[in-house]
Image (cartoon, rainbow, N blue to C red; front, top):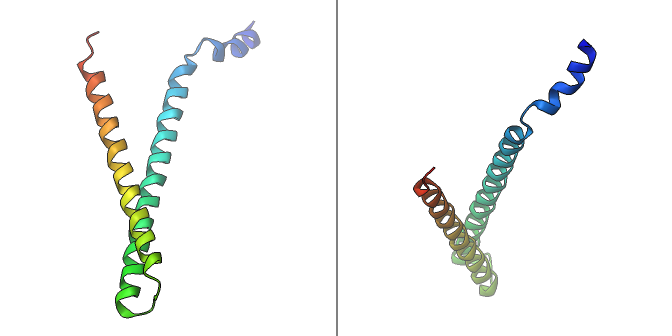
Length: 96
């Protein structure tokens, strides 16, 4: 009888709690990676700009493309942040 209860115990536990925690950790990891990518794009843009100023890069289009990538990625990050904050505020306004 004891062996049966040990087998059935995980079925009666609430698996959605651990699943929710895993989803939150997954979102945090994805968001952290996205922020690191944005930071890398910003640094690359800065480096290309410095290289253009010092004459190491002759192609202005490379610098402009890097700057636009950094700008767009930053704008997207800000918009995602705004949507997450908006969703959080909407959840907090809900009445139980």
